[in-house]
Length: 233
Length: 246
Image (cartoon, rainbow over all chains, first blue to last red; front, top):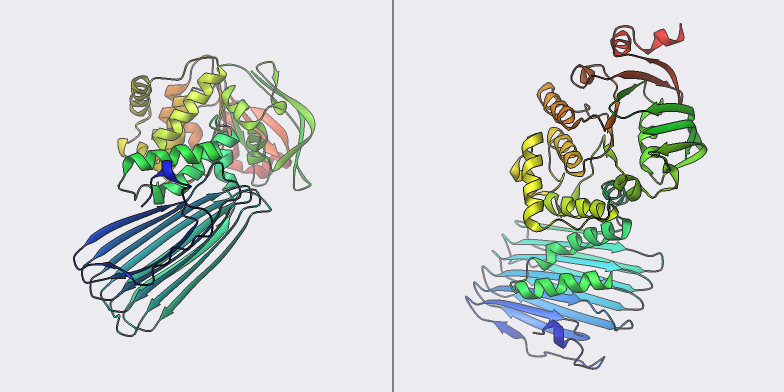
């Protein structure tokens, strides 16, 4: 867990391998927040009736060459587990963020949702690969994945690969991925209401990230993130 | 207040307005009617500075200033308001937050201090009551999930908040049942002062039963082809646009 004020303590490319999985014990509720971790490899196993909420945030104002690489593997190994993953990145200049999530429903009756939102400006590059597996024993699983990306410049790039593998038949699962630009109709509507284009774009982008930010329990951190977004934009 | 002279405008290279002239004074309500494709919505888009349209000839003077030189937000701050035919949904931006930003941008343009929180809330309460805007709607995202009537009501509410000199109502009646239409029209009438003016763009005469125009103009093929009093709208309703060609 990191706080915003302490966001560049580790040099780039240090690997934080968790070869033995990190266990969320039965009945436990856990929130993990990763802010600007250059390289994260987490393998988490959830036991019965546990709830896990993970936030992955890429948001650096001054380190214009920052590179982030995150791999998050979560296994639901017992019944009635709940997993929520929220990721957001506002990448600018030459920043890069590459996120891989693996969510494995090994046992049925579980729930997982993933909301991953990226905004890329300048020459920034990002990628998201989401592997979602529902194994034959995992009947009555609910699993959702949404990846939304906004490109603010012609040079920015986002690669997105949602991958669903479903081997059980009684499940609810969906995924969606979109990459687009800011809504021109909304920008003009706001300009017609006295708001200049830059301010309108900031309002739209803060609203875009709000879906992720509002899920943080730490309200002070929420405020810090919004301020930081506004400074970067 | 507004003087449009020989206005020509294109979209994607196609000429839509072909020499339009129109003069509007304070206190007047002008209705613009006409068949589909005549250029009614193009006129409202050109006046508000929509980037898809290009003015190729002519000029527009608004309160002594060249309107066509101004960015869309500057035109709005100078007092031009468009009630959109299709109000845009803005997920995640609440009506309250949107209006606080809009009102304060306008005040800054006028050299006034931003409103304090309490003053802003008082203004909101007053304007909500004036146009019958539901409290629940102002806390929701702008237009998101609003019914057709709620969207149009929200437009009139925003108009009340921004107190424009010239309001353009683009097909405000489209998609409204008769009750919603009456409520919206009442809002517009309440906001009318001797120093404001309105352009009411409409397909049908029925809105003009509620918002009574001083002048009715018929727009056809990019030009105003006939101007009259409110009785012209009734004549059009009865005979259709075809009689203009007789």
